[in-house]
Length: 165
Ligand code: RP5
Image 1 (spheres, helix red, strand yellow):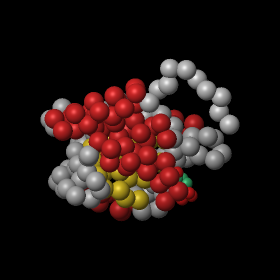
Image 2 (cartoon, helix red, strand yellow):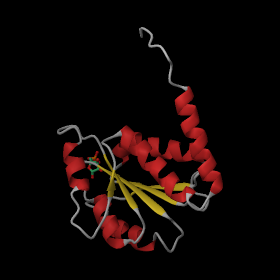
Image 3 (cartoon, protein in one colour):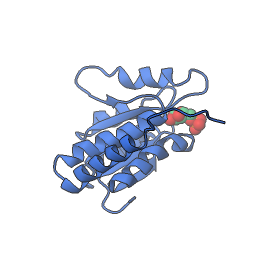
Image 4 (tube, protein in one colour):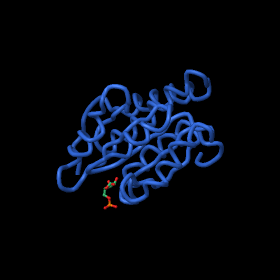
């Protein structure tokens, strides 16, 4: 449900982050949460970053999910310029497997919070689920969608393992 009165902004530092961040978008789709997606780089498009972060709340966004890799300043910089909750997704980098991204995002100084998720796909999915949980506090449809999502996840777990080819 992208772009229609988006409640969540999914931003990422590069086009190369999209294969990971798409998991956040797909999960929000499953929950029926409207979102927008943008490339906003702290290093390469700093003015776009300032514009995005400082207008996000006025435009009606409720939560920002920010994915970045390497020297991953994006989530922290966004959080410094908006009162909205910011969830950071460390992208798995080639050289350090995302440990650089994780440490860059998670070690915010006290006073400027970024809710940091796991490296890569799991983090992107969980950032979306966490966003859904926050929005569900005031939205019964999203609360119901979250319940359904968990029920399906439970039902998809086989009782007995099989040999995989
Ligand atoms: C970061 O640098 C991006 O978030 C990306 O994860 C990383 C590499 O970017 P590209 O060189 O692939 O554009 O800013």
